[in-house]
Length: 216
Image 1: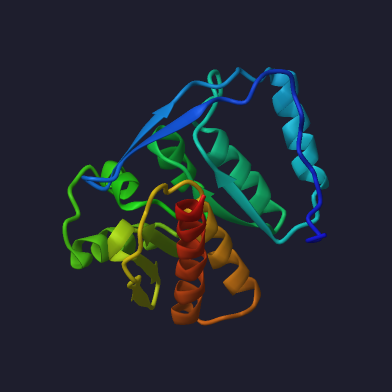
Image 2 (image 1 turned 120 degrees about the vertical axis):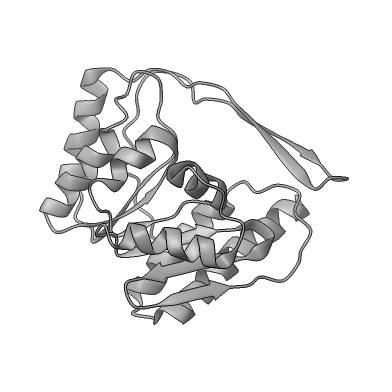
């Protein structure tokens, strides 16, 4: 009904389990993520073949990697997609994120913790976050979007900086909030919106997901 086409590559195995434990007193969430199953080389060949057939402008490379997959996978996929004219948003963490950045994706969307891990330093202020993002833009990344929890989000491109504040809401679970922000960012760019408006729309999408989680 929404016009979304299914291009999943289905392989043998069970999807990994992810558990979130919420503490309403401290307003904290603890993640317990179990390892997933290990794709085979043949499975990865199917994935690449499926990507080659997709006629799309934007691609998202995101999530943690399953066991046995080289941490350079996002870097290699981003280079291949960009070589055929595609644009890519990268949303990952750790080694996969670090290697992926080497391919200069058009957008990266770390949260504040992932950005601190990448830079190896604490980023306690907006100025520190912006400076870290500018260094990444200087490496060829078109737009850096940092989700900062209750402080909102920071959007940094070569010539602009937008810090989008968000209203205080009840947060029971953050599941999907980052994905919603990534989707809102791409949707805004496809509509040709300026960065300030894109930041507002992307943050609204993320908030809508948080509100839905709280209502469940």
